[in-house]
Every structure is written in C-alpha cells, then in structure tokens.
Image (tube, rainbow, N blue to C red; front, side, top):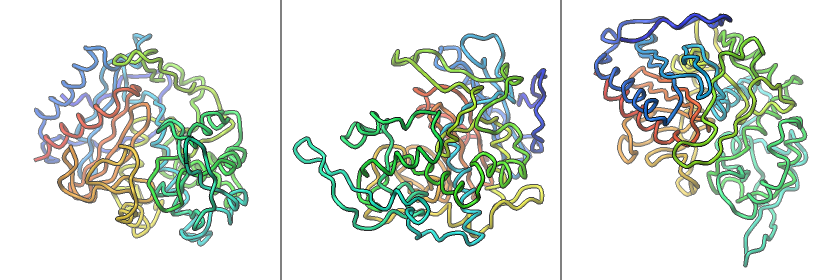
Length: 407
C-alpha cells in the first residue's frame, strides 16, 4: 500500500504534486518498498524516531510516498505528507544552485577570490597548532568561490571537531540567529582558517558565505533571491527561512533527549523569523517541495517548462571537484565518493558501504533529512525526519532498502 493520499490539513499547502504511478510501472517492487516502510515503522515502534516521510520517484513519477508515525513525541498529530521539517544542510544545494545562476549571468568566475566580494577575507591567516598553541601563518593562495562551493576553503564548523581553531568558533557568536549575514561573514573572516585553501575538504560555514555573496551581487536578501530564482519558479511554496504561525500544527519535532545517547536535542524554533538567513542550514521545507527541487535537478535543470539552471552548469556541479591530493576530513563524504559544487558525488560503484550508481549525487541535513538523485536509474528519493542522532544509520538503511526495490 503506497499511502499516496495525504491526510487533510486545516491549512492546505499550495505546492503542486508530482504525478503518481503504480510502482510496478516504474520498475519498483511494491513488496520490497513495503519492507522499507515496515523497517521505518519498527524504528518508530522502538522509540528510535517519532516519525518520518519517505518518497521514491522514478521516471518522473512518484512510486512511493508514505508518512509514518507522529510529527513529534509530544503530539498525537500523525506524520503527514505535508509536515514541515527543518532541513538544515539540505539548504546548501539550493543556495549552491542559486549562486551558480549568477555565474551563468557573468557576475563572477569560479576562480575569483572571495575577497573580491567580501574584503574582510583579504587578510585571513591559517591556524597551525604547535605545542598546544595556535600559530597564525599567511595563506599560500586566496580562497576562491569554487573553494566555498566544494568546502575546500579552510573555513570549518565548530561541531565537526575540537581543534584550537574550532574552539575559537565555539566561543564566537556564529550560532546567533540574530546577526545579519553580513555580520556573520565578517565574524568568519576574522577567525583563522583550519587549513590552507584548497588543501583539505572540511565541512564548513562556506555556504553561509556563498549566501552573503549572493546578497552582495543581487542586492537582495538571500531569502528574497532564492524565492525569485528557485522557490517560486518551482512552486516550492512551503520552503522558507521560517514557517508562519498558521502552519504551527504541521511542524515536525524531535525527541527532547536522544533515544540512543540520552543527550539533549535542541533545534531552532521554526516559527521564529531569524535575522540571519543561513545559506548553510536555515531553510524549512516539506517532502513535496524538496522533491520538486530534486526532479528539477534530475531533469537537467528544468521543471514544468521553467529552466532554473543550465544543463552543462549542473553537470559541472555534480562532478567530483576534489583533486587526488585533497585530504577529506571527517566522515560526511563516504568512501567511494568525492564532492562537487554543493553535492557529494559517487565516483566508484564499490567501496561505499551502501548501493548506488556512479554519478549519483546527494546531501543531507543535521536533523535527519536527506535526498539522493541517481541519474543512471532515473531515480531520486527524499527522506524527512527530525532525529539528529539517528541520521547516519537511517540514511544507509533507507538507501539499502530503496535500491533493493529497483528491478
């Protein structure tokens, strides 16, 4: 049973759905897709996650779309097809596409230094740890816009490690949602880099800086720019930097404490309008909204007659941009993968601990949302939940079970 009819809500969204088709007509096994939903229901029954949505789309049609469990642990509201989620870093692909539309208009080159647009980046230093102290050295080459897109900028995140540079990040105001994008960029520029630009892949606030560059070039707020260039043309009417009060009954929430570790879970208030529109992680969205974005990408940059980005530009973005000597730090880029301009990209059929196809690209969000797009199979999936501690396990579980259904 594909559960393709969403429960009625008091506040009906306006996002047009993608067309539906029977799974068998799309080369998908119903019984195997049901096993995927059953596995997720077991996680809900065990108390691992409050609820989730899963959509599988092949050949331009939805073959499976199910809402499982509840929207949150403190509500009896069932998870719905139009539940709203914090998508965190799934904001990054949208912003990356956004800035590349400005490349297509000739506003910059990928090799342009970031300091050309944000002068505060012209005097950055690299922090080298020696004998427990931080030594600042000059950059060997300027950080470029391409470095921001592929996370080789030398910028970092405070939650991905505990180096001396990351401790400076932790002691800063970078997590404050009441600063502007301009103030945030100036703060990042004032902190030392964790490595030389171009030397390593470090997951980072780089996409937040891209968001600020979008504002500088366009003369608009990041939210206004994304709405004009991507969200409105794709009719992603539920995607924004906050949810409005009438939608309060549709918000997904996590457990207050992680069911595996017992650590407290604190996510931002989706109803609160932030001053900082975080290009790296600030958007909220629905499963269908993000599916329309994915279908546009799978189509080569267009959906329903609206071209968002050029086909060859998108091919560039979904190619591996990491040279062999670039060291990948952390575990977010799995074995057998590289990283493009806003997406992780599968480079090997094997090596990775889950199935897929060479050329597949994807990304995910800290609270548990993720998507993958497989051009070879004409397939994509969108998974939404608010379970930060379970995100890595669930990403692999869902991948395994979706690919098991492909015939």
